[in-house]
Image (cartoon, rainbow, N blue to C red; front, top):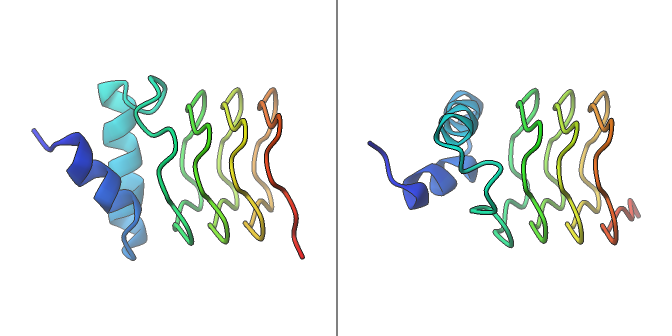
Length: 105
């Protein structure tokens, strides 16, 4: 089985297929929602179309990340850095964005 660190490294990769596969594996292992990703840097991550429903992404640096068409419903994004991130078409239903940085300029 692939380690948590290896999966997180895949999230930061440039191959969108591998990134989405890593998200899937994190979801299957329960690491997407258990706080394992809190505070990591995913700057410019290619997460377009990812299933991040109920993910715990508190304090995660997602500036300039591609989150277009991503399911972020019920996700925890408290104090996450989302400045200049692409959120076009993202599902933000019941997403907790308390203190998140959403500045686009």
